[in-house]
Length: 258
Image 1 (cartoon, one colour):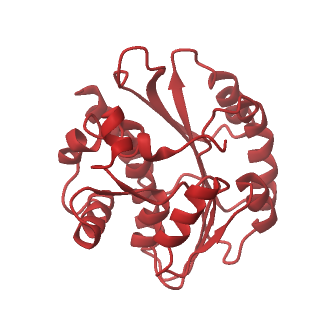
Image 2 (cartoon, one colour; image 1 turned 180 degrees about the vertical axis):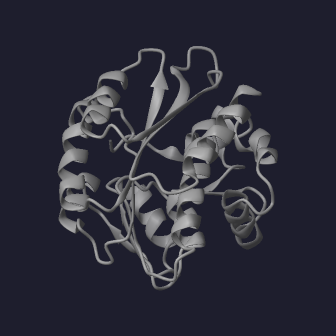
Image 3 (cartoon, helix red, strand yellow; image 1 turned 180 degrees about the horizontal axis):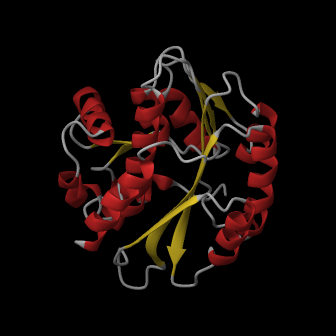
């Protein structure tokens, strides 16, 4: 969706949910001395300024990472990524998932990032310019299909569209089925919003029907402001890495404290 810009929502509670699980998964994968592939279908700009006008307008980061950071120990990979980026870019910097991946992965790992929005793509290219990541101005679904199975075959794909295109809900189960048929060893992580109108439910039923072993993790939270439709965050994870179910349980307890 070319109108969507994540700067208004960076560091919100959905980001906390998604990025904590992503960081833990990447940390697990890098424990083995084997290279891996990381693919992201909807990357955004990669690096955000929480003191910027966009973040200040919505206040979502103030209700998100500013409150939730204390949930994570200093040795948690999410907390470590946050600190690394702040040390480099200042206390108001917040890493999106591409920069979290860049921070936690190694030079031997392959990083592929898709972003269609011209402004966001330019910012992403700049944010990743010092890394070996490949940034594509290409539809993320098409990129994933063209890359999979990637080299190396070990790895993870994060699928995180804006969900402002309603067809995304209907296309996702078929896309995932096609992807996993070609790349059966890849970890697939799909983020989706929990809205007052639960549009995600048929999609999740279809994914579970095709992948009954999938980890479906959802957390509720208060709307960011009156009338805001998002009231929670969901992650569907296929080929769930060891330890991620425990991380999800810990997050459930943390979100219940809100």
